[in-house]
Image (tube, rainbow, N blue to C red; front, side):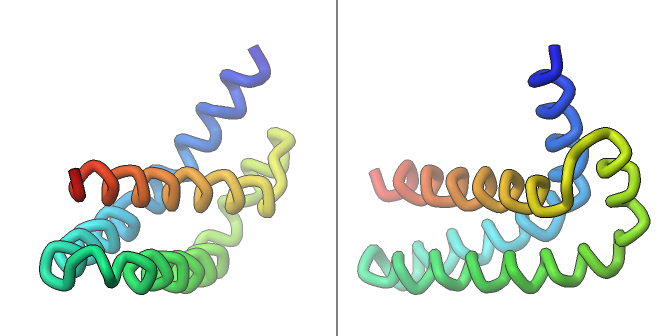
Length: 100
């Protein structure tokens, strides 16, 4: 039961980031289609760097929202690591599917 609660909280935090990550995903896919497979590492690094910038901005902008997650037992670091890992994994998986 606790795992389901953590997943719901992580999903709620990811939804706040979803507009930015969806925009970055579309830019990455367009660049991938335009530049080709040989630029895949550059596109992935672009995604990582821009996720870092978005994460920095959102952590300052939504500073008070993290108190909610903290009171429910989730640290800020845990939320960011899970969110960015999920987003980057999804991005790479979708790039591989597009390549096929």
